[in-house]
View 1 (cartoon, rainbow, N blue to C red):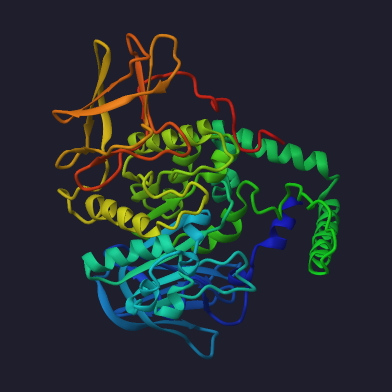
View 2: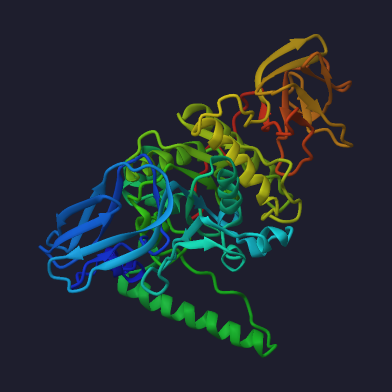
Length: 517
């Protein structure tokens, strides 16, 4: 029965059986297709209708199934920066559907929450980045929450269009365009405030032992709050009316009263698997080169930092399966520094889970943004750094620039040397850089396990950490706070990822998303 409520949210436009052949909504004029890979094209038609898809010198035939769905796969094609038509013909369709100005190049999927969804127009950035955005070979499509009421559309880079582009994704794509010199397309699928679990299927949550408790908590809470699905729909009507009335009072400058709290249910934007069902499925199984991901703030706020090392790898595994590429490059952003109300440990432990994922999941890459945060804003305006650094990873890992320095220093080894601890690093590029700051980002502890601020020195390519307050130092931490000023970089200006040498039990070890319900 609950599936009926999901259906209330999900657009069935692309699944509706009609008398005319229709491509899926993600295919529009100005589409960019992935070069060098089999290209999946799908859509709807009348059940049993013969469908022919023509592009370049290829024509592929298929027959719509009993539900009216069809799919063809075009053979690999080289890059083409000249727009061509993608044509759909049906044996029972009078007029073929023609999509114009279709290119072949590099296509990436961009996912996450608000720091991926955030638009160029919302940045404190050089307006020239928008005013000078004229590139017919850089294109972007933003997947809507409701495809029926807000159809997606591939858009060419112009000042007007770029203002609405995802900033993180745009700077990533722009840097790829500058270096690869081929068409680049980005599929943006991101919504602010969402947990990673919202972008995973119920099947994955239920079948992954360490994630099942998340969906179980959601289901248990739903059953406790609502006798049945009809009761939930009635509640949502009342909730929306209450919110409408509150808005009316605010406009009338009357006391609005407490803001109603929406109970978790199928229409809640933060529910597990919600945006996988209503948004990501609009893009599956588009042929993409890889994915970029900027998310984690919500999971940190929910005190689920340690659990994220189970969540993110499972999401990566599922996306690779759904986009039919078991080695799909997955590049992501480590949480930026932030000085908000969240305690230090959830942020630090989620960043550690992100580092753990890069170390343990093949073909993943992580950029560090400790020098791009905003103490008072969880949405830092450094999206140019985000895009540039993600593009460095892509160029190194995907596009063959193996000598390109694309990561900041990462801890390699710790040695206790008398009253100090000596740290050596990998990915130091042409060398380490230790910047002076009033407050050190390094901390050190003795056998009592109590960390205190420490002094750090750069000596012969290694970092020497000590404190007069600690005799017989045992462990070091760097950047183990939600907000700190980074001091350790490589010679290319890329910051070191926060780390710790100890194995003390994480504060968030037994927490998980929705355990508060």
